[in-house]
Image (cartoon, rainbow, N blue to C red):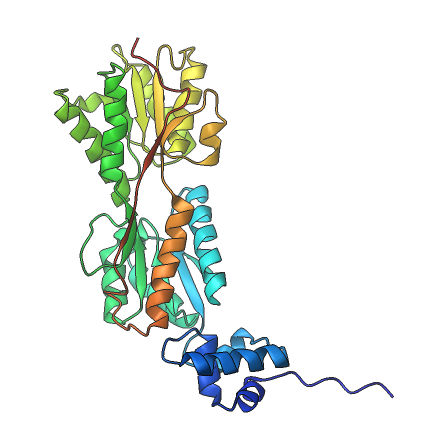
Length: 346
């Protein structure tokens, strides 16, 4: 006769062996703070002895959480979303949570209502909002009203009651523009990102701040629209480089548009950096493998994703139910990556 299948170990078996309630075992599994060290030790020894491996379903049944964190995104940059995801995924895994990706159309009139439906349908414990969703006031107000824990990545404005992870985009753009000015450039073109991205507007403001601080008058003809995509950078660069008095440097709001500007310059026979300097923003991997390698602002995107997940999970685990104040916000420093695409003004 075939041998009898071994019964799976349950949370109740662990509780019996440790001499505690199954709720106490659940608290230990969920890393909750209100369990004594002695009790935690007994539970962990019982888990080890029984070789117990809790499933997500069992953990949900033992408590009120789903152990699911939502990453809400709507961005044209697949690299940016992927990097945020990688950082958040690792932090979630370490804490025993799972990451769920939800793509949202931030331009939709009912985006807040649709977002709420998706959150409730998947029973998310909390959500991370990436730009431009982190800019959307309607979504933010809905999450606060429904008491859904959330953390914003790179919101357009920092407010004390908002838990967020950010880098000072305005200062970073200021520093990069100042670097170009230090090389002797005075006609510096700027390729904007999508206007609905708060960070894109902050980068434009940083560029304008630097010109003003150096006594250089802003020339609107040197500012062109882009949408963070390669082709928009190439098209904007063509508009700039076809001008009678063309710029000697171009600052693109992200590396993808910067790469587009470099491609246009090559096509028009303009030497980089001898005749034209080009800089970007973000420091994506291909920024260092374009020819010449792109000078850019390094933004620690993976680390920002991990920090956002950490803030959110920490708030959930400590049972802070106020979504407006999970934890203090975290700021990251930018870094200038000087490469071969920049040189002295001709």
